[in-house]
Image (cartoon, rainbow, N blue to C red; front, side, top):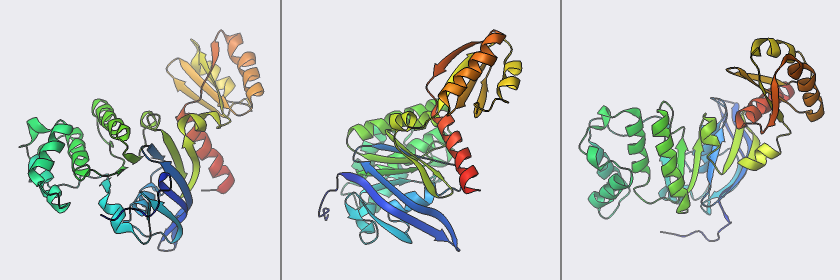
Length: 314
C-alpha cells in the first residue's frame, strides 16, 4: 500500500471545509486538527452537519470548499487510500440480519481482501467478546450486541482511523460503557477515533471535542480547555424549597441558566461577581447551601447554542 509522502503530525487536518445540498449549506468553513491516537467527539443537534463532516473526512463525500489531509492523504485526490485505512460505523446497523455473526465478519473480511478471512473474523470475535454468540443470527441480536458486531466489522482490516456515527444511540448504559472501554483500548494502541454523540458523559470521555451548530464549528479543543475557556461560572444550590428559590433566581439578570436536579439547583452565568452576589442575596437568606462548581459540558454547550442563536439567528 502506498504510504503518505509526509506526516503532518495530525491524523486529521482540514481547513475551511464546506458542503451544500440543493443550494443549502450544511457545513460551513469547518477546520479541525486531530493528533494521532486521539478520541475526538463531535457534538451538536440533529441536522447540524456532523454526519456530512465525517463523510467528507473519510472520502465518502467530496467537499465543495476547503482542503485537508486524513492520515496524511489528500481528502480530495486520495480518498481511496483513506478508505483503505479507515473503519466507518454508520448510525444504523448495516450488516446482514440473515447471516450469523461469524458469517457477517468473514464476508466483510473478504471484502477487505484479507488473506485469511476465517482467522481475521476469529480474531475480531475474540477481541470483542463475540465468540460465544458467533453462530447466532445477527438479526436476533439486541442493540448492544449489534453495536459490538458493527465495531468488530470496522476493525477487521486494522484501520488507523475509526469514524463512528452516533454508535451508541438506543443502547443501554452498561453496553455504552463497555463500548467506550473498547474505544479507549484502541486509542491506546495509536488508533484515532472520531465519534459523533449526543451523550454528555461520552463527550467527557473524549480527549478532544467539537460542537457544531448550523454547520459551523463553534467549539473545538481538549475537554479541559473547553471547560476552562468557556467563561461560564456555576453554583450548586442545595435547598429544601427549590421551587421557591428557583422562582426568584430565574428573574435575576446575572442568572443565564438554571437547572433542577431534584432538590438541587445549578445556576450559571458569565459575570462571576454578579452571579455570586445573586446567590448570596437570594439563595442563602432562604436557608440554602451554595457552593461554586465546575460547569458541565452540557451547561457549556447549551449556553454556546443559546448565544449563537441570539447572535446568528436560527
